[in-house]
Image (cartoon, rainbow, N blue to C red; front, side, top):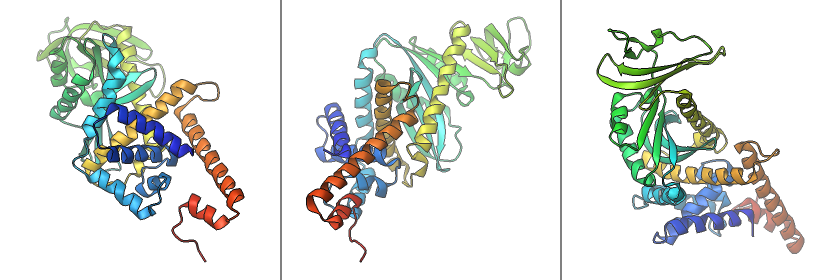
Length: 365
């Protein structure tokens, strides 16, 4: 069995188990899209179609995948939610760190995501794709995403929500306060007005004494004068030239642990880098946000496969996600060359080998 068929079979079993009542034809197209993404390092449909083991012509394979992405009856959210629930089923009663973050895509789309932070990795939980250029979203958009994420979290879990300065709103803090199992660690801007217990007037948080290499913890802080609070605040400024001060708002007692918890949010940036530069997300030419939404399921499942292999094979030779991707593609190249060599030996027909392994519709004269 070729590497692509082996990988396809593995993925098809996984999605089929999570969605036993889904149309088998859709599951097969979905599994082939994920397989192509992993093997071709591209989200380009023509490239993904080359991986598909089929007698159909290349143009036909591409059209079938376009129809899948454009089909409004494909249950994107249900497919993703089923896989997420299965993955988190054993986390009941545990503390789960969730990071909310936005990133731009191809200069015309913004993806807002909530990801589970676990052992240095950020695994997407839910997301929303919008056709816009600014990454600053209204709280209503954040709320819709979080309301979708809430039932996916196992019962009894304690949630710590991590967000950068784009998610510092008191509305988000208040939303977390409505559920005793949800807590927040949100970074404030330096110009945020705060009123400290020993002061009568509000001041910008950047004017509170903090030097490089220094850590401070403030208690009973009110934001915007007396409009919201009291909250806790952890402040830190690393002693490096490029470092910026951190002002972290928390609904629980501020301590060094608060800073450690917020620091986990940086794992999201690592995932953004690999998805854009190693998986080829920046090369996507799909036009509609609805089709991109379906693509994100494909991308995230492919990334979950990379995460699984990384966890299983991490060693002195496998230190990064890039090492896993290179190893995976080396395995595909070896399988491809071995298959081509074996067919050439068995048939003695180099033209047939080229047609089979290069997917050529017609060979040059």
